[in-house]
Length: 122
Image 1 (cartoon, rainbow, N blue to C red):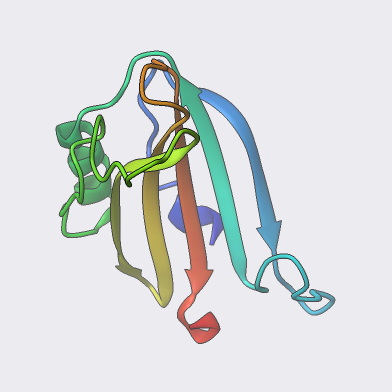
Image 2 (cartoon, rainbow, N blue to C red):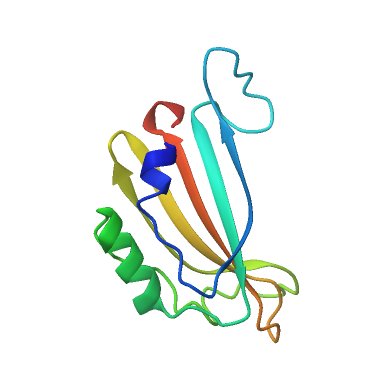
């Protein structure tokens, strides 16, 4: 999983903001499924869909990005964090998702999450 996550190269201005790996023989799937991980970054310079497309294609995904990384899909009556865009696919037996989270409509900060989970967890 970690080597797959390492294929997703963050942009230079993205600051690391934590990660978590859950798996192995002693894994207890309480809060997150076993054989899964996430890695998170923050940035004040919002990525464009082309940025997300480029990093996912370089990692081996098809590069399809859902949303414009700015306003969509803005659910009605949402005042908190929401997914501004995302890309997903399967690599080497793992579901891989890249999500750009927007904290609020007028907030320039973005959270970028790389999430991986074994397809066995579906």
